[in-house]
Image (cartoon, rainbow, N blue to C red):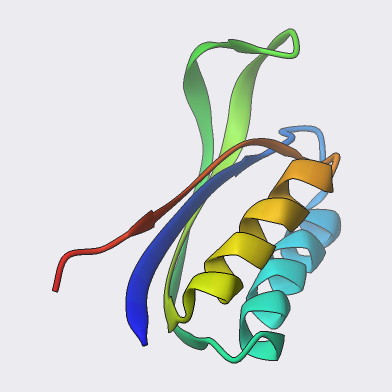
Length: 95
């Protein structure tokens, strides 16, 4: 298994329950695809470096996990089709 980091920024107008449900959706997807969760860091609402979809803030989340390449690809695919996600980035970590 390879080590990955996934950073994503959620829509700032989501209530706390919707934010937690969205984070749980992604962590559940990683585990369903055979990945192992290492940590989930909820950084909270922060100002974006530039406007995205006319928004200046977003809710930042950093997830570290281990998995196969197909796990990261499926996570990337779901990020793209989820309306609550403003920005996302999945990278492979060095050992």
